[in-house]
Image (tube, rainbow, N blue to C red):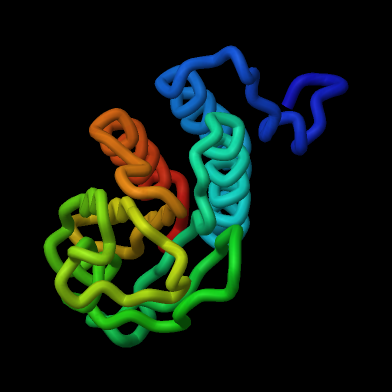
Length: 176
C-alpha cells in the first residue's frame, strides 16, 4: 500500500465511473489487498466489502454480497463465509438453490428473477435477482461468490465477465 493510503480508501468509488471501470477497480483493489496474505477468511471478508460498496456506488440495490465455502471434510455442502448484509443460510447442499447449483455445475448462475428459479432458497424474501459465481481451485469447487439484489434483473453479462475474473483471482490468492 502506498504511503498515506488507508485500507478503507479501497471502497471509495467515483460516482462518475462506469460499471466496467468500477468492477475493474474491485479486481485491482482485491489484488492489492490480498497481495500479502493467503488467508481465505481475511481475503473474502475484504472482497465482500469491496463488492458491497462497489455495487452501492453504482446504485445497484444489492442486499447481500459474500461467499459460501466448501464445508470440510464434507465435499457436497457449502458453509457460510464472510459477507455483507443480513444474516443468511448457514449451509447449502450442492445442487440446492442457486448457490448449490453453481457449486455442483461449476458454472455461473445469472438469475434475473429468483421467484422463477426452481428450488430457489430464500434467505431473504426481499431478494429479486442473484448472481452466483463458482470459485474453482485445482479442478474442485472450493466456494461460491454470491450477490443478491432487491430489483429484478440486477445483474448482466458485464457482471458475469468481471466476477468470473475475480473468482479466478480469488482461487489463486487463497490457501484453501
